[in-house]
Length: 405
Image 1 (cartoon, one colour):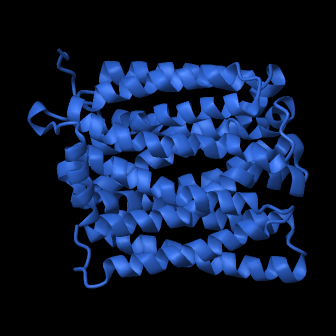
Image 2: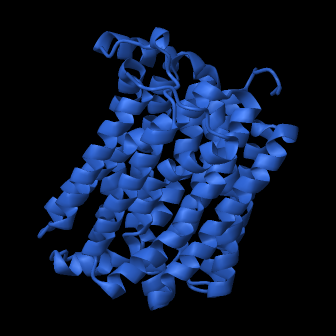
């Protein structure tokens, strides 16, 4: 039986949540400097196939969410997260000793499965404790801390590769998982009381899915998020090639990647300040409009003036503007989708996360796979998918009451 734990302060709670959420980002971004080396050592013929080391993690992550959410509603948040960390470590060990691409991808899928509970159930824990705009504020603060991980992860990966080799990146991930597990186990109380447990059964899950599907706001904002995040996943898949092949930055790639990631962190901080006053819908719509505008302008300029490869400072300016807008969307879209799902936060968080992933995975694969040595596929992806996202958002909000605090 779990002993009583003193409630965490807001600072410790948001920092811990951010670190737990960031294990997915770390497992993704720390690998980027190593993709070329891994592809070469494992005998990958098509350089674009090395992107599968990134996307396979998200495939496992998408499936893992469907199990993690309802399981946490049945046995509690903490036990489910414990199981997830165990699977994640097994996945890291599998990839660590991989000698071919298929074994590497199997390990990455396991890592995604294992990372899903710590990523998705922390959202449920936040929803157990907060709602409305205060929930969006907590998520935005957590995302601001979380985004520091993508800013430094490629540099950590680059350093590990220089000091040892790509195997060290998986050893680092195992160490991070142990730290997260220990902090969470020792400090975080269970937020799901026994009377709120839901049975883990196909009938209960099916009932939860029907409930989720009947809520236009939850489904609509989830789909909107999945569409625009498809472009972001396409960037994650192709960033190493864009910076190191297109712009020939070599070992400077982690620095430029980190600079772009900090734009998301800055936006998350700004969003946490503005969301209480302006609301989630207002900020999300303006962010999508911003992505459409700057991407459309960049697309025209890059295609007509620079044969698809604009000057690096201009590309970075576009990337930071776009990522600032993306940062405004991270916390808001998740909070909007979760708002009507407080009665089924675990399963709700799983369905929101899984549906976002299943939508963004093929879209991100398309954006990344069409990399042709220029930035045109990436810029086009952001322009088109942000347009589709705002159309979906308009459908979602049609006939709805104005947002209130």
